Length: 115
Image 1 (tube, one colour):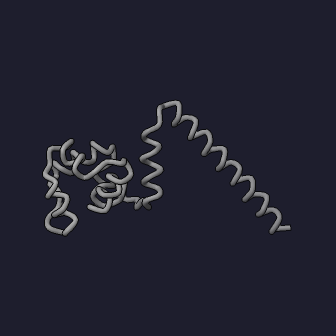
Image 2 (tube, helix red, strand yellow):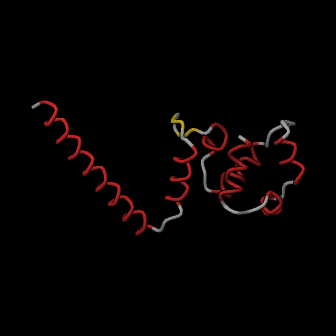
């Protein structure tokens, strides 16, 4: 869990001190979590998840709906959430185009190998 908190701190270009100040938690708390001396309270986890706009599932276990995300996938989801509605629609269209192209290539390769 602390690795995901530190990842979010770095990804968002803030310091642990700023996070602590913004959430009214002590800086020593993060130091203790890094050393394995305790874990954040439920209230603190909720504050952190809201601050970074991530789910508690992901923050606590790196999972969303029992699906394990890699750091790269988590970063993509975080970036997607930051897009405007128009940006999200454009991204979805772009992704659908890539997938349609992949289907065409896969179909052509399948026909070629069956010939």
